[in-house]
Image (cartoon, rainbow, N blue to C red; front, side, top):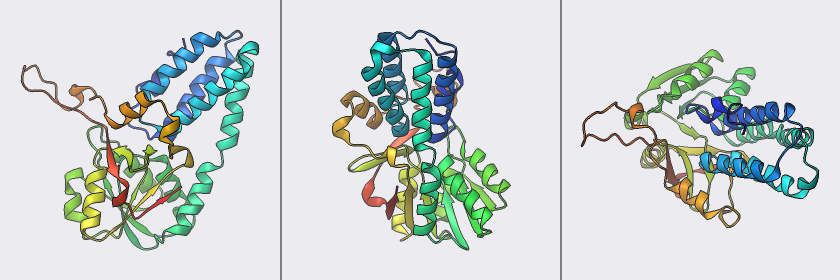
Length: 278
């Protein structure tokens, strides 16, 4: 139905979940601008398929759930224009979340003159560093490359452009630099009762930080805190047991018994985290 409008976001494997949500909202807005009549049943089927596709990203699940609930209430009067209004209302409701979270994080964590370890590519983390740059607070950054897609390089470039010194390191070098750092900052894709979901390599960081008595903070939009009782069990199961991604991203193998297993996400025990800020 609207996959042509969402091709970019459906194939984006380097952006964080909040950035993906912005892309999704823009793609759906573009679709409904061109659509006068809307079929409720077909639309809900498509939206639920999107929920399954983005099952690792709680912030996207929040938006899609909210939109489906709105559709259920208004299904007798559905028009593209009304759907567009609903999406804009959601966007307006949550547009201050990033700035609120940024202020809360900076009040909770003293980053001045600290050496900070970062992982993956998080718009939430980047927002914090933009604020630090405006306040002229000096921070030295150690950023993992974040394999297999190496999106940490994108975050390293963004933070360096804000004026910070950035060391780009291999994921496996975390143990070597952990004695040097003061704090590890992680984003997240979802927070559950006993664990949270984030880019693979996050467990390694949290585990070694604990062994070296370093603080680990997870900074999260409130929409990423999930009540498991309210989420479809199939989605929770998919979130906790990821289907391997394209093996060719690791290695193009034509050998029968040489099988690359490519995972993007992992669950990390909440007990390894110093504090969740949301």
